[in-house]
Length: 274
Image (cartoon, rainbow, N blue to C red; front, side, top):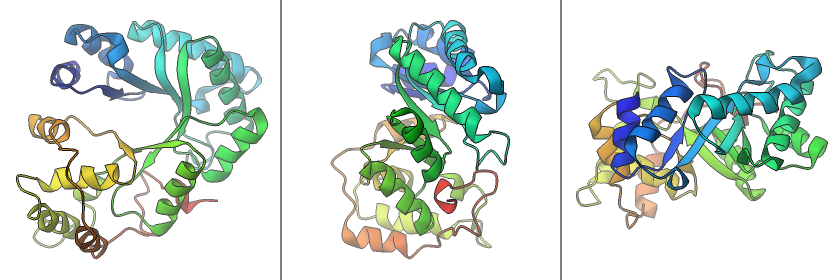
């Protein structure tokens, strides 16, 4: 992991997202940043806190202390974004509403202390986000969630609502549908075929780059995995001049989409819940 993140940074990548629960997570990212030789202020570093681990009676103080430990582990003086990783609904009951609010208060404290520049939530429903805002007066700067061009309308509506509140939306899992979901008998998903068709209309474009452009065109930020050099090259060499046309979008929309009843249960969709 260290080698992949270092290579990404040396090739111009500037957003790194991690979490303590990821393999080698925060320690590896901190080491990679140091080895890459890129100035800290040039890199946007985000990580997450697990509200489920917070002691209910001391969740606020625990959250603030967890930020301190993260900074120590990563060898940093501040973070660009700290997210609450999973909210009550998508945690399948492992996080209570009270825990979530108190952890949020702890992140507000960390922000006021200058340890975190922005705070956000990941895998939260609309009602949970509204509860945090109503309880504290603090709106998340960023909401992160599972998103791709083939989401059910409920998830698309959720993202649009987030953006309508002046909150940035950051997507993960934008290629998850390719890894086994909706696979046809020839093992090439219909979604990939749709993007292959779209890519033929844009000189030197790959279908993966067209996926990236489709989200950026919706003002959605993206985080992608660094499995191999091909992904690195595609992500970092995706011209901003490319624009999907109305015909391109129609081609994409004709491909199969998930529904709330067929969503991937390993990565549930915030918009499919109240």
